[in-house]
Image 1 (tube, rainbow, N blue to C red):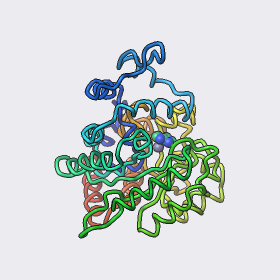
Image 2: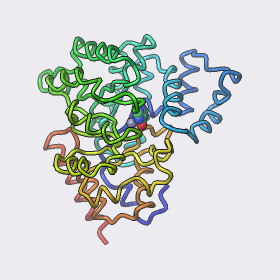
Image 3: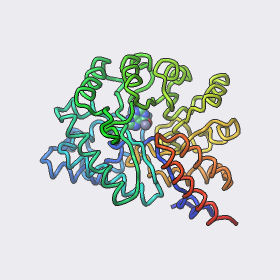
Image 4: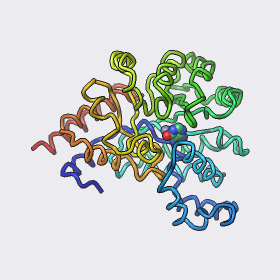
Length: 358
Ligand code: HPA
Ligand SMILES: [Zn+2]
């Protein structure tokens, strides 16, 4: 819970989330539940003492040395996800919690290679996630889309094979005005040493097919990882992007081209990219006119969902309601949705601003 006096305003703000890994919603409790249901043996206490109980595992998630340390836990945990219903349950966990935090629209990542490499069918994963998305739209009023991420630490040939599977299965097709099963491409996992340019071919194919495009960049990597993604992958957004502040020319370009950064403050804190939230360049970005949204990244690991991130920013920066309106408006503007839905979200934002006007 947020200590700030603006808490009820922040809770009410209609939110768009653009940086959320569905696999990052796998809490220690849900992991143990799925392991039991699917008869999956967890590491023995000798192999990994953190797996003794949900409590010890949750405790393990209280400290990560860096991105790599987190990713090891994240990929290890996923092994309990087996059936379509597991993926649906995981995504449903996200949507119900996000709804309570005021999320109205969510563009969510998934990592198909982390499942197909374990012998789980691509279609099993997508069907499960999309069943939860449909239910979320009907029951919670949350619109959403699915973004397929390539794991940059795996060989490029693996990403190419994943792209081929998605193309052949018709997951990118637009049928009878219906939404695509997969709307966009993303790029995640270990950043430094795995440059965006490696994935040019898949992004070119995606662009040709009219897919939306984003990539993680400038989380641990220097600003050239951001410019590389813009120049070579033609991304429309940058996920994280906090190291943009190190390159003034690139920052001006990001402003001019209205590239949205999907900033994740608690993630940056938990992965030691910053020592405290006040070092996340929120004030610099606001002052320079860099557009950004605020997101939770991997909420089961990083101390909370989107509202916790909004509250952490408020506590560190003491933003005005007008500044929050700008953040909310930029989050709507940078969403991959039609003008009609943007109009609805803007009406919600106006209503929230009037309700909380002093
Ligand atoms: O924050 C992240 N960075 C890179 N890869 C990821 N995969 C899940 N979360 C992340
Ligand atoms: Zn991420």
